[in-house]
Image (cartoon, rainbow, N blue to C red; front, side, top):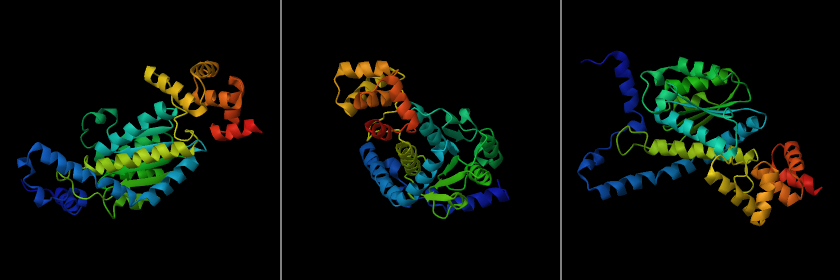
Amino acid sequence: MTPIPHDRELRAQLEHLPTEAFRPELSEIDRLPTLQLARLMNAEDATVPAAVAARLPQIAAAIDAAAERMARGGRLVYAGAGTAGRLGVLDASECPPTFNTAPEQVVGLIAGGPPAMAAPVEGAEDSAELARADLDALALTADDTVVGVSASGRTPYALGAVAHARALGALTVGLAGNPGSPLAAAAEHGIEIVTGPELIAGSTRLKAGTAQKLVLNMFSTITMIRLGKTYGNLMVDVRASNDKLRARSRRIVALATGAADEEVEAALAATGGEVKHAILAILAGVDGPTAARLLAESGGRLRAALATAAG
């Protein structure tokens, strides 16, 4: 069957992307023993952190800009298709239990919606219009940040999300896996993590996806640190929604204060199980309502509340 012109054009574009490149030296890996394959794949993965490290200044600048807006009440929105979209949804879904964020504070959008988490939705990643509709449903503001994620750096859904967000005045970040990408160029903060050709040609769920996961980990975690969601390296805003997290909450209060179990339990009981409030109550010697007031006046920042309590 003769390719139609659009298909030929797309194939030509893909052939020039490092993430899509074919590596002849790997053309017989299916003949290798499993252990050798595992070693080969592990060696490939080991190159990813260095690729991320090369872009740390750009990553840090984007995080600082996003954190500034989130401190004013803005939201962090990830937008992508396929693996990139799933990683964004994953990162967003882990913020409420880890940092006690509201569900709408960090949002993951995937082309095709929730069904695309489990299976491809035909044509969704090719639709910039779909991205615009998904963002319009969020009533985007200038305090919001939209991070378009795409290994190729040319996915229409991610490009459409960044273009529409920028037109609405939101901060935009383009996270791509190829140099000179349209996505990075379209965003105010372009981040290109170049991990090169994959072990399996074009399978960007591998190194490119690993790089995206590392960057998204940084983005959400460091943003939350900047917003005062941690005390040192402790998750003081953790939401104790199950037995494991309740046990972790007690441990965090103990680590932060050095208090005995009985005092920890009493403080958590007096503050409705709020870890940050319990730490403040113990360290500052205040009751639950006073701890809540001090934290509210300090924008939820524990160190600032402790300084205020100390006079």
